[in-house]
Length: 279
View 1 (cartoon, helix red, strand yellow):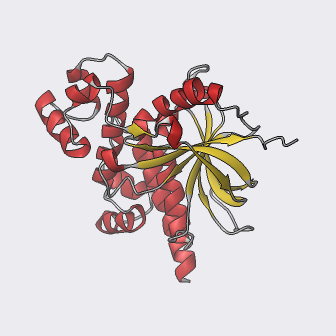
View 2: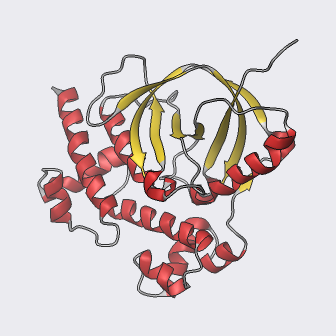
View 3: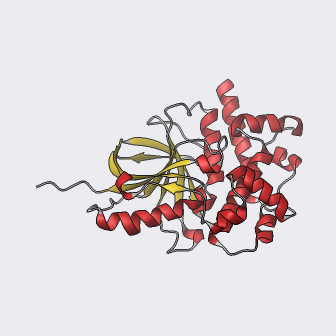
């Protein structure tokens, strides 16, 4: 009965997460979130925090500040507009919140093109990725918006006891975001599970074969990962003597973005490679 209750809670909390992500500019009330999750408002907050690891207000702030980081790097929108988009009534309030989260004021963040660091060419690691089973939730749209999909997947997995010390969080990305509209981009939030794990609620299993990869470790906000891709394809790959395999790019998220500032987030960007041809 405990397992049935937890899985039911996860399904219901996922509905509230989806509603919150869909209405980031017009946040639903506590009553609306509780209603979406079929909980009494008196109990919803505790149930949400149990499965999400944060409160709804913290989820909303995290999503808005992540979107603001993208806007600072990828648009020339005035700072006041970015601040409003993040839910702040003044640039001063936004600056304080952004600095608290990212360790740097938003103006400086934009001026220096972010805060992340990536491995140089001689630090690219060639790694043999073992065969694994991923439980995934598909995402269609901007890669910058995959975070809420991961929130729902994590709640689904946590309720089933599928997250432990050995769990790997690996997303797959099929398309080049610079060559097609955001609405057509295909990706999937994933985490490792035992083979044959029962799935539900839109989650499906993907079998990833054992494959050789070139891995670049990036430290910093996810909004800045596009630069790592540009460096891999534009600088490293042409001089590497390697050939990409017929498999989507992957990102492995190595620590928890809910408990660490964005400057400390670690991501391995992994390019699958064809097997070497030996004489």
